[in-house]
Image 1 (cartoon, rainbow, N blue to C red):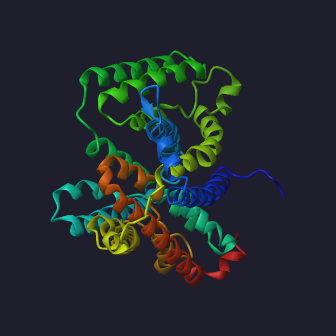
Image 2 (cartoon, rainbow, N blue to C red):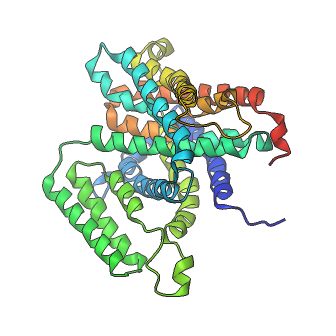
Image 3 (tube, rainbow, N blue to C red):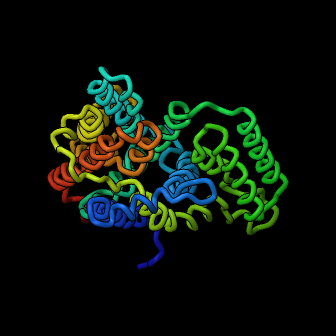
Length: 391
């Protein structure tokens, strides 16, 4: 039996492992923020060097690499993966759309009376693929590969939706001068690629210039990472035999994926989940509309949206379910998609004011935890044991 993992299996393995590390990172941040080390923790996050705080370097700097990887993964899935054909893509796309619209609607319902809260409607829309696959991995061969592929494809469409939401709805006043500079350098990158420049150093330098330009443009810097990911070629123009086998995109995904999963994402969790709950009345949190909208959007909005659109798509013959699976087998997966965490926290930082973030972050943590528990129970109940022999 070969020890070489297929790309999909390797991806799932890394994401599942990083999900557990993310969970521990979040717990550590919560513990420190409510301990005697809280003052040191928050002072470190606000330590300023080179014009940005440590918190900003994580969220605007390191997370650009996360979004760069995300852009490449989305491109790969669109070209050669689970979203590469209409038949493959139909079910996860419609499911993801339902899983974004319904949570946003639930958030809007709870916050419609307070205009200042409405900007957070995008928070419960996202799925944290690392956490979701981490929970799914606990069931081993009990879960068919087709369900894992569905969850991965759904999460990738979710990520694309979240990127579009950030780009169009959470962008500040735009500076045409800096945005023009960024566009010019994007053009240089494209010309370099056409000219056959293969030095990664050149692209790192040009990419860094784009990041700085976007930082001053008003468009969030992480969007530059997504665009660079989309621009990364799947193949170089074939000039010799080795070119046909070499994929810059696959190489960079393979290189960056472990660093992002085991380094950047845990650092992001450490920097963003440290919520000081000392002296706060929990009833004040529980009955806050932001908290309610986020938590209930993740727990019930995701599952209702995904299951409803899957049901409608199947009945209208827009999409077909994978072989041997019934709609009930997707119920647990629909709740796991309610684990928002990384992307939800990121959007929360962009959408709300500091005094509102307490309620959104507690909503994200509670909603993600409940979604994980309910999803795990439902998968245990609904996952057919006959798939054990198929894996």
